[in-house]
Length: 110
Length: 113
Image 1 (cartoon, one colour):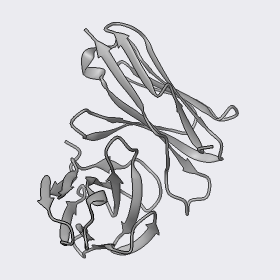
Image 2 (cartoon, rainbow over the protein chains, first blue to last red; image 1 turned 45 degrees about the vertical axis):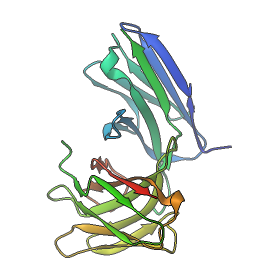
Image 3 (cartoon, chains in turn green, red; image 1 turned 90 degrees about the vertical axis):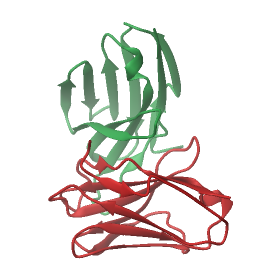
């Protein structure tokens, strides 16, 4: 079992829909990261969070440390949101590198 | 634009050859990370340098090596290339040595024929 699991693996939705991508992890962490990889390959860091909730534009990330779970939400989704969304965690032991999820491929249809 | 630059953007070479990928981190960032992403695969961490010193090593093959120079730019050397080395190679940088927000470069797409 992977230490970081994302669901769903693939998600197709219509423009305007509310999107939720989930990330569950099995190790103790000091932080969780959400990143976006565009179809052209470029990777952008969206959020780094260790508790609670962060919001940036139409993107919202939440984390529940006790449940070892995080969600990334996209409100009023748009075709330009189509990308792979990647969850990664920073384990408590700072000698370890980020542990990466496999990514969720999101397609928003107009 | 993340502020991280990578050259070249594309590279086509033959099996058995050696190539060098270059990365310049964001101004002020001391850490450089290298990742490999094969087709339809997730990111695989290769190696991290912090202020010129190797900080952490991941799944980096013995045929691959890297270094970080005094001006903090980094190079990833890939030798005795095989078809399976074809991938996107990303460089990322961060301010410190630990796992804070990483800023990714645009990647170098390597094709080994």
